[in-house]
Image (cartoon, rainbow, N blue to C red):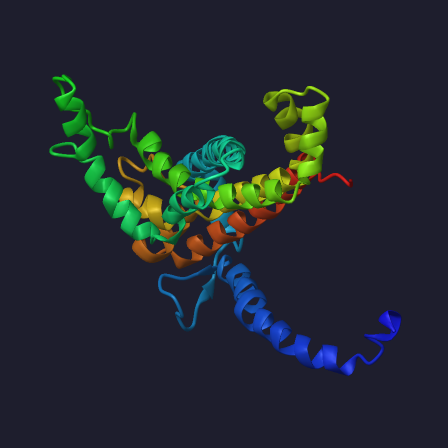
Length: 295
């Protein structure tokens, strides 16, 4: 019976067709038009009578010559490393600690997951208040502890750190929930057998928890790396237009700046193509490095 359950293909086609049409209209067609727009001169969205660039690849020449593109790619690469180490790494530690807590585990899950449900824009405004130069919460705290000079957390030297800290903090809980769910799926009998054999708690984590979490960790890393390419709202709220001096642009925020602020829609479309290609290449590399295992 199981082999014949999909013998009649008509119901499958009926249910899959709307989803396919939705993707064509709202994903593939806009992406195709984005490619076309990258070869045209466009200053506004939906501009009629657009003309072709001369030469047609002019925007791509500018892409390789634009120094801000290099800055945004560097910052995005740093963001990827931060998400792997700061988000997934901290989430692994928290998940292993909470997994050993018999009472109050649900409380910690709620506390760590809470930042995810808060709007990133709201978090950006909150951290703007925390990192204010004058009367900011952090500077007031440091002043109370005896620090005599104020720190400009949005200066050129500290801006990248100030931007990435809240981004890292916001998504730790997301990966924490995924990892704690993976830990809950590990049989307690394995831990009990190891304890009987004299394994310490650290050895149980090293030889049971982490190996059996391998596939879950790989999934989290892939999500973190691809997610770093899409980060936009929180960095833009804290550092609009790449301030200071266009040093905090990410690939996503720079694309938005060129499209909506600088009114270079054609160049913004070119940046979008670069972002898609970067996402595909990066995800393939990460999938090869963090390959899942069969157990």
